[in-house]
Length: 477
Ligand code: HEM
Image (tube, rainbow, N blue to C red; front, side, top):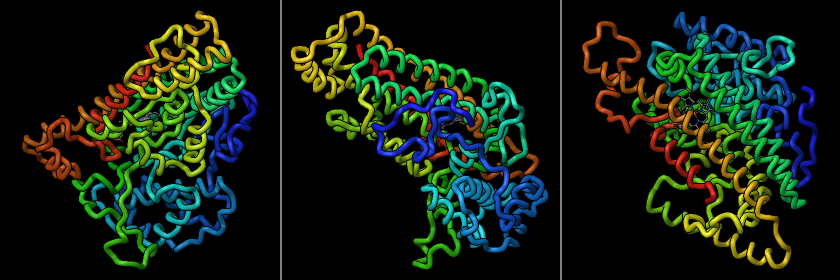
């Protein structure tokens, strides 16, 4: 894919953007269009089953077909795009096997899937479970050769679990938001370079561009309602996305056994992983890092202590855990970006005449104030109107991110909480036809609203409101 924004200098990072598999055009989607098929014919048995995924799910023969697969070696996957494709194919096959429709969940993944899946996942630095990478990052193709190839209306998915347009749309909304991740990367570079050369105008331009990108992302997010029905999401799509941690109610109390991958104590062979969800997107963790927004532990006692210490973003254990579900190169990018991006400190340092930086909530403000008092006398500082411009631009960007998080909260309420509540209310009514959701109904019956869990097993509303509020609190007065 040709460069849209140009190849800027990223020498302030230890690796090149290419080595992080990140680009200024498409962010964490990278510039490589995902493979439509594994290069080597040797993998035909996997490719065949994945194209017939929905048919075998509906016919009830999916597990039977999986058990007929030969155990294939991963040594014919010569390139990164082949590894990505293999991970995707295997992730869909594994989740189709575990969560086969109209069947009880299966807690043992057979050797023919488990062995190559664990090997491929390890190569990519991922856990052997469906993740945002298989659902979104590597699961897209473009349709027509138009000017705006990567626009939402010109994208489609490669795989989906249910064959429903709702699922395609559900995935594509994230893909289109990831495309905007290109702008996030571009702005990060521009902001860091401008800070290094003390170019305040450049910093402001970078922040304003970032705000624009976030605004566009929110617009895309709210298009979820257009073609993804909450009922279909909750009852048909979401069950396939589930992992095997924090969802004991679905019967996988011990997690999953990956047959043939561990010859040790049988009890220890069971592994727990959360399912695929957009909390595994690197884009929003990158935005938090760029803006220096800190998130904290869910434990309130701990939270108080943490606020008094200097906690690096994201700080929240769940968000940190989600990094383990990102491709290794992306995780490395975030870790390295944290070390070089000093925007918040720059804003604190350069707005001393126009902001109350002694905001007690952030120890770092006080530290920055003392640094800035020194720098005032030693280096001089920008005129008040420039300081105001910087402060406004920074706060506006944080507000734009808050607006994204607000819109996302409404989505989670509509697609998860409301649907779960409807299911709970129905469970008290007598049902005529026994369906797979009967067991779900039973489990949901006694749950209060605040006990509903997200894909990752956390309480989504409480968790997401906390992140949203921490975003709001990061504005500098
Ligand atoms: C029907 C659509 C969606 C639902 C039901 C949904 C649900 C959730 C839930 C329940 C969480 C909490 C973590 C967990 O329990 O897994 C979460 C987190 C998150 N989601 Fe979504 N989500 C949806 C769409 C999206 C999209 C399209 C994006 C953007 C690409 C997104 C970005 C995020 C992010 C970044 C987090 C981490 C929290 C944060 O940084 O604010 N979500 N989502």
